[in-house]
Each structure stands twice: as structure tokens, then as C-alpha cells.
Image (tube, rainbow, N blue to C red; front, side, top):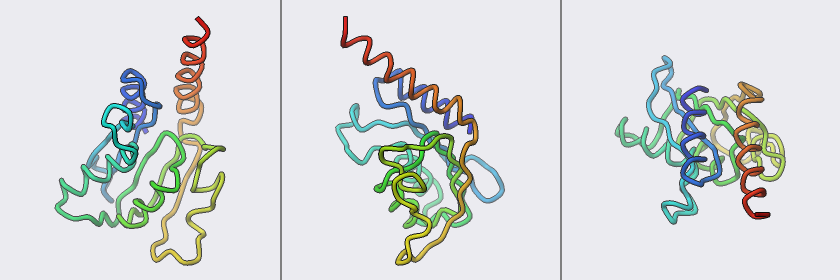
Amino acid sequence: MQPALEQAHSAACAGEVPVGAALYDASGVLLASAANAPITSNDPTAHAEILCLRKAAQKEGNYRLPGSILAVTLEPCLMCLGAIIHARVAGIVIGTSDPKAGAIFSRLEGPKIDFINHRFWTISGISAEECSNVISKFFRSRREDKTR
């Protein structure tokens, strides 16, 4: 989770919602990591998970990443769920839940959707406090800046 947390901090410094992702191969080798960047890249699809999967797919020369494990600081959204399924990610390690838009277990139980053609495992709550604090601190700071 540490590379994903480093990416989340990087996103916060850039004024992005602090979400980070890191993708590992089946043997635990880091393939790619990325930070949220939809604002700075003017790209609504530039979520950390999507950017991380893109980097890894380029590196591996394959749009499918079987056996890979994605570590994310925040529960993925519906768009990222779709990318995870299409990339054939084997498992997701989630830092903290997203009660507003989480599509893995909070708002939608993504792995249990009956019509998807790929299944993956999940583990949640890894470095949960630190992952949650990064996001809370970011939004608290933004609220304080608006009141000045």
C-alpha cells in the first residue's frame, strides 16, 4: 500500500483528490503506480486506478493483466470497476471505503455482479486510517481555504 499512499500524497500536492494506486504482478513486483489526475489532465477518466492500469498494460505489452494485484487507497468507483474487470486484475487491496461512490462494496457489490465475466478477490482496511486521513485532511483543508 505504501506506493499507493505516496501517489495519494502526490495527488494532494497537485490539488487532486488524493487517491493513489499501485499494481503488482503475481510475484509481488511493482508494475506501475499512479495518482489521481483528472483536473490537471482535463480527463475525467484519469483516476489513479485507470492511469495505473494503463501504465502497467503498456509496460507488459498486454491490455490484460492476469494475476495482478491492485492496491488502492480508496475504494474504486464504477468506472474503475469496469477497467479492473476488463484488465483481468486478480485481486484488489483497498485502503478505505468510499461511502459515496464505492463500487466494490459500499454502494455496489461489484465482485458479485452476476453478468460480469471475470471474478476477483478483495481485501479492505489495509492502512485504512492513513488512507482515510489523507482524504479527510485534503477536504478539510479545501473547506478551510474557502472560508478565508
